[in-house]
Image: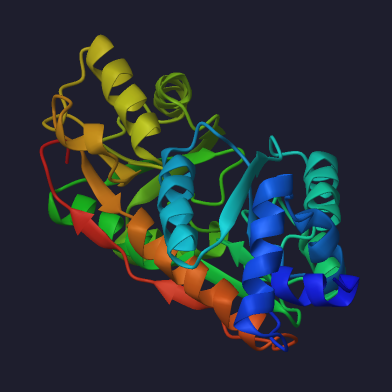
Length: 314
């Protein structure tokens, strides 16, 4: 049997009879042959795999995104490589190079800091990239993000409507999913309301939230409202406030972000900004498929809605 005919059967290219196809498939089964998908992918860039590169594995939204994205890509008939950059630009570069060498069809990246040039370099090589949480202006790159500015405004308005006037913000030193916007956005909303604000940045963990609460109270002892970059931070802030004798929400209202499952189970249950990980995963998968189908396009960012879930903590 000619090698080219075998190759056409293995790659399902057509141009052979059904009898020939069956003889080759029988021989493949008898010999235990497995096609080298990596070698094929290096030539065709159709390896049936995609890469997901995240920054911080302690972020609950990251883990929820990974689980949902895996399901979405499975429905597309693709497998997913999952790797962390540990919030380090050099590490992110090494991960991107490794995935590129494994001929992934595309990548989903939660970028480290300002690494848009790094992503643009791979997009110029023809690799479709979806940047989550950070827009990257380059062809073959699509941005998908939540409307965190809208979430910030919803949270601030709720605190103000419930009588809070001294608002603190616990942001993340690493995660792009920080509820708090930049200084201009913060000043615009709070300045118009007449409320003061302090901001600290911590590791996005329960311990980080406790430390952030302590830092904020040192800066503003009369603090009566807090916005937290995620629910773990909010839970830590609640615990630290209560340890100091501050009642939540009577003395201080605390709002989280993400709406992870424990948010509704802790005491007091968390008021939080809901970021739907399933919606994010579906949007990411659709954006990547669009880039694969129409390579080289420059696309407008996809901005996903958020909502305020009011519970007991604020």
